[in-house]
Amino acid sequence: MPVPILKQGDVLIASMQEALTDHALLELRDRLSEQVGRFRARAVIIDVGALDVVDSFATRTIRGIAYTAKLRGARTVVVGIQPQVAFAMVQLGLTLDGVATALDLEEGLSLLRAEAHGEADAG
Amino acid sequence: MPGELRVPIEGEADIVTARQKGRELAAARGLGITDQTLVATAISEVARNIVVYARRGEVVLAPVEDRGRRGVLVVARDEGPGIADPERAMRDGWSSGNSLGMGLPGAKRLMDEFELSSAVGKGTVVTMRKWVR
Amino acid sequence: MADVKLAWTSHALPHQLDVDEDEVARRKEFLEFREDDVESLKGLRDVARKYAEPVIEEFYRHILSFEETRTFFQDPHVLERVKRLQKEYFVRLTEGEYGADYVSDRLRIGAVHERVNLAPKWYLGMYSFYLRAVARRMLGAFQGEPEKAFATFLSLLKLVFLDIGLAVDTYIHAREATMRKQQEAIRELSTPVLQIRDRLLLLPIIGVIDTHRARLITDSLLRAIRDTRAKVVVMDVTGVATIDSKVANHLIQTVVAARLMGASVIVTGLSSDVAQALVGLGIDLGKLNTVGDLQGGIEEAERHLGYRVVAQADGARSA
Image (cartoon, rainbow over all chains, first blue to last red; front, side, top):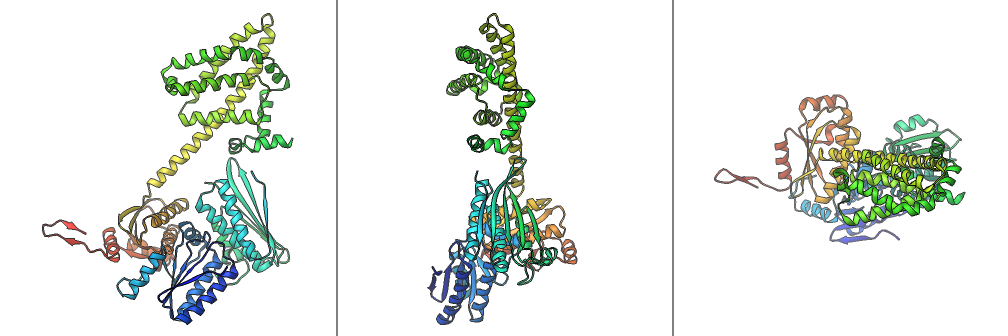
């Protein structure tokens, strides 16, 4: 089952489910890239709230998605990293440098709205 | 108390199975949710190494005990090409892209005990343990 | 023998204490508790059934006559229940079954005593009273066979010492676990995560930071970020004993982890001397947003969240 991608205005939202295979992750990256171009999306939100493990492969793929999105003019925000997952990622030495993060979908959308209105400080 | 569980690693789907079973065992042994995640993540790293570099192998999960402490044992073994310089792999394996053994120093940081046994042509065995605090 | 092994593995307490069937067998060997002891105790079964009631009543009269031990049996339901259990135990001593179930029950007693704070001195004193009450009745029961009564009593002594050994071991084990929990609680108290405004957390770090404590701090902070939906954390390190490269790396990890959850961290209390020393050691402090003092850090955090602190006309302040 491919990961569903929702469109909310000019923001694409992909919610990763538990137990995504490597194959599904790569497929998601390609589909997002295509849709950013097709819909001229301004931003991509990747929701990892349902993931109980984010390992080095998943992190690399997410960075890849952010890079491809950026090439097509879209910002990426990763939301929903759970406390235990953040802890494990940091122990493993994984970073999402250059990719914005927010607590959850609501916060992610809020962040994008604020940026669009030019009100909030960055970061 | 269940005995050991062998998870054959033949494709990427097995990585998910191995880490889910690992999490279940960790929970059954009494590890907290954070430690369960560390175990599952470490398993994900070593199992992926098997898929990427050896194509097939197995992850063995077992409950262990030591002087009243309860814990989890994870052994990841394969008969792949092996690591030429295991010491160096443990030192800088994670910093650069595709070097063999990447993810091992990370896995070591996640677990309480970690041993790597590997040589060219002899396959690889990674032995890790995590204990209830 | 497979069934016996299963019986042993199904009990949790023996496992935590490494009291498996080999260990129990060893203890019995040391006590010289053998088949003939089992047989001689079995021979006591009818006597035990006959005297269970009077012995237990006498036993509890003694316990209730001392203030320190009376307190454990204030509730009449509790008293009824333990009397019943004691009578069952008394009879069980002579049933000849001293395997996994028996051992498991003895271990549980020790755990219960630790939980209710019944000190070993009372437990041992109670056992002493108990043995004497039984000894007196045994002489009567073995009329004309004092050697047999004595030999049976010696068998009973061996079994009772097996029991006491198991109960005391569990008591100690439970005590150690309680102390570990208390130490953990103290550690947690010493690193509180405080919510000082909506979406704003304050994390004052005081004392020595080792790897274990750093993990606890990070863990607490990340949970607090999730629970309070914090967007900004002010991490004050003024009270940290020594900030060497290890500690600095722990702090940086905490900051990076918080950021993964969408919270930005302002580090306060890092003196410029220490900062320079760390940079000299090759630590990249570029990831950190540092502000000199705590007040400045909180003000910056508030600005970041859109708060504006305004002084009222009469000199009082409000946010």
